[in-house]
Amino acid sequence: MTTTGYTEAEYGGVTVLVGGERGAYPFGNSLLVRGTDATLVVDPSLSLVASAPPADVVLVSHAHEDHIAGLGSYEVPVHVHEGDLAALRSRDVMVAGFGLPPDAADRAERMLRERFHVQSRPDAKGFTDGAVFDLGGRTVTVVHLPGHTAGHCGFLIEPDGFLFVADIDLTSFGPYYGDVGSDLMDFEASLRRCRETDARWYGTSHQKGVIEGATEFRRRLDDFAGVMEKRDAALLALLGEPRTVAEIGEHRLVYRPHVEGAHVEPVERRTAAQHLARLTGRGLVTEVEPGRFRAT
Image 1: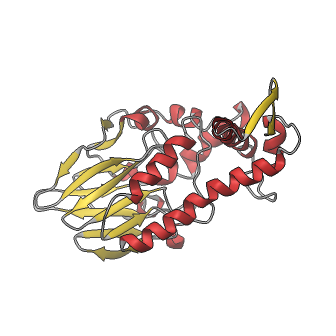
Image 2 (image 1 turned 90 degrees about the vertical axis):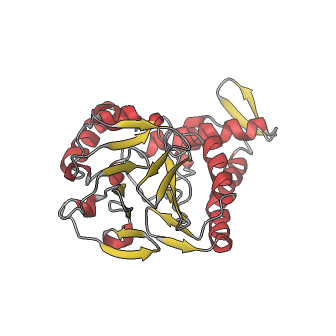
């Protein structure tokens, strides 16, 4: 794939490296944060492959290919949350986390190598929630926001008041929690944590870019979270008669009918199973016989 360069946008002392196509997948938005003692890059994207700015340390919000495609440009310390550390250290572990059938997993591994330049980083180090990277006059604090992946994190940069929320990206597609290590309930909790965090700017990894002001961010965050409720409503409507997880997956809660690929079926099934568990817990769905569910 031909990579494109990035454009720079300044927010206080934070430089957003806006990826190709406004950061739409397969590209993404990266951050460059400078202090008096050190410089840090967050999520080196595909757009940084050809021309990566120098840095002393790299932080990765989570171990997905579009967030680490430019990582090969950096022979410096690399840090990620402990929940995603194994996936960053091993490309095979990363692929396994997609939960694909064997043939599709092989194709995914090749895509990671050839399209995204992903290499295993056994040197990567783990951090936990609240870890602080002091760059001299500017700090970057880890905000654990699991759900998308187990180790998905945001970063709060002070004194600028810039919160990077990574793949809580506010797009109309809505929250994605279809990997093996994803979790719907964790994602909901992470959305609540974002909503309760005051910042001046909120940066996303993809098309929505940077949102200024907590009021506007929370409005968009509520719309983003509302996609979960729409999936619940679609599922309840479907369960007017008993159905299995496989049958629910065929009707699709996540992808539109025209979307094809080996990833669609496993993602739909995992998503359906998580919504079933949530609705069952609320008393809105019951298992009428083993493996078959119906709205109450």
